[in-house]
Image 1: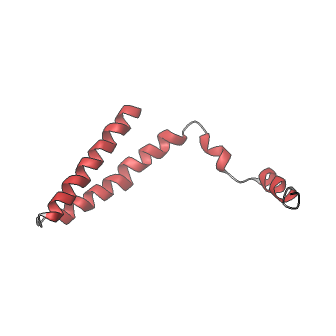
Image 2 (image 1 turned 120 degrees about the vertical axis):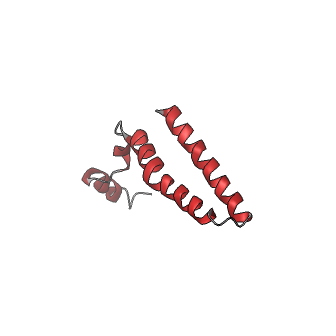
Image 3 (image 1 turned 180 degrees about the vertical axis):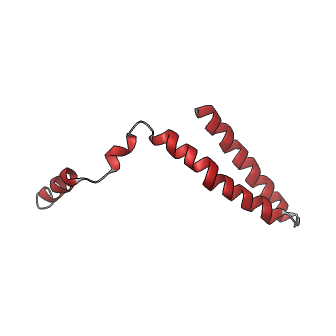
Length: 79
């Protein structure tokens, strides 16, 4: 899966570079190419990346629960 993500990221970079080149040459389809690149990033690449990154429960340390709030408020006045 790591290899697939790397390949997809390289495809995105090449796609954006091609779009930037087309914009600089004032090609009529340049805006379409850039728009499709953004759609590719937001709806294909990022969801797969987020799923792969956080599938093993690595996100749990970032969730605020009651215990974390209580310990944070206990330590507020102690400096």
